[in-house]
Image 1: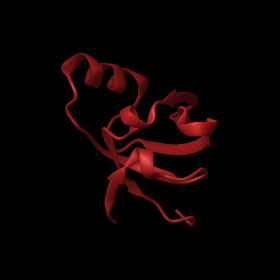
Image 2: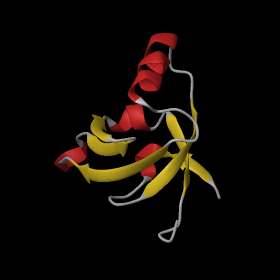
Image 3: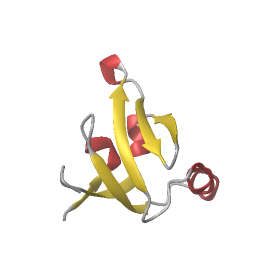
Image 4: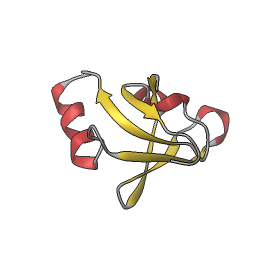
Length: 82
């Protein structure tokens, strides 16, 4: 499976987080606190129009990230059958 940025997933796509690039220590810690850790399943739920934030399901909750923020998270895309 190729590793791609989270920001490139389409609505309804599910993936497994592979890594988070180093933006800065405070930001990386915040992503970790939100559940964006390697091995975690993430699903793209919906996108705001005109390039706005995207809502993702991580663990048991939903949160939104800007495209630039999601581009720092790399995932292994999963097939529709898991």
